[in-house]
Length: 571
Image 1 (tube, helix red, strand yellow):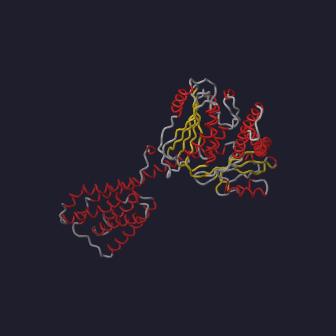
Image 2: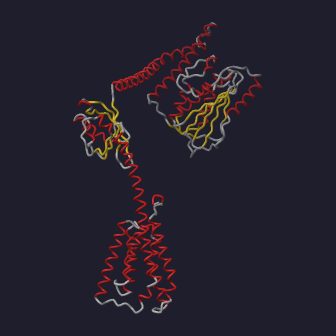
Image 3: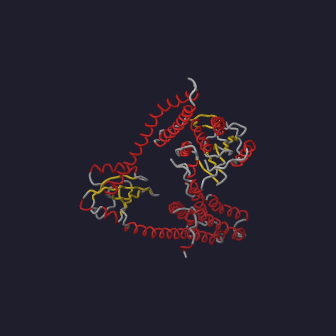
């Protein structure tokens, strides 16, 4: 039955006790004021004075842990008890019951220490009243006992309720603690019997160890409680290192050697996890030849990857120097600066220039990806209008789009889109997206670049009217050297680094890239960057409806260029 009772709080206990006292006084008020020994006015004043400690107990019930409220309550109840005893002539009659009021009030709304304090104060008061009584200094007025007689049952009820509330609270709390102890005993038994090597550490000493720990370290003493944790290491040097690593072992790991079977050194990895009571639970993972092999292979793979990245960056950089010369000479030949060229040679010059520019773009992408992988790509943050960057990028590629029979348009808000970002990175994102869209959009199609500010995010979307991407391939795009299966239908070549570079540059800004595509409708790549300068931007948030804009642009293009030619390209 007790297990089902809730644990009454001290606030509730104080409230109940105070209401019992006030209710009892109200019930006995008529009897007290009707007594012939004193006038009704005096009796009413006595009842009002008797109600003060209960009112104070109710008002200050939430602050019984504080010294001043607790002392005030003890003094009020003690003063009431002393006054009642003095009025009745001393401590030899029923008035002695009054000295139980202070500890009863403390029991209802305080801790065990508070009860002891109140009892001590009440006891000293009882000794003082007794001394005055036996010294002949206290004489009970005639009929005083009859006046206070109706209040004695109220005092008895209050005292009983105060101690009863404290007892119920103590029994319920003890039962809860007992249930918790049983639970912890089960957990402790499970911990002791587990085959995993575990040790619980408090400070720098072991307070518990599992059976698995004893099997891992057979030479442990019978009782390991109090054993320094660092003593588990194999030799003095490693003990010192393990003791030093203890301070940072919570949520981390360290390697050491222990004295295993036959006294042989065994390499282990120790992992630690902090608990709510500031202890540390450690687990031991024994390493073997396979672990060492895997670690060496991992280190070699990381070293090879770093060497590959450095090699690609070095080779790409070295290729750019002669490639710039090739592009420059081919531009001179294309411009016929030194006279006309035969038709075939002129065509070759155009192809050399086009291939050189394409190779230079690929090398630039490889260099940028190498810098990003090596974590050496540094953003240069600047404040500018993102709409200007979108406009410049579309102007750079407009002639290329027109040569391919594609309508290229922009959709920007009327106001400025003030951002704080890397201008070069944003320009590279847009050029890659626009180049990709133009490359795989059929003649007569449309490409639209849009930009909006939405809260603190800059949203850039580039959409095309290609045939779309298969749903199972959309999530793979954006990985290095990854292209859609229908990219081979395009006459232009690609490396598969464009979208990967866009994603990496977006993530460097703390942003994201997403791809949405529908078969026979087209593809939209959306980049969201948290770079809006909210204090300077006056752009109003708008919804990006890229494909609606594409359809309108395509209809306008079709009215000028005739019916669109079907193709199988996509962004």
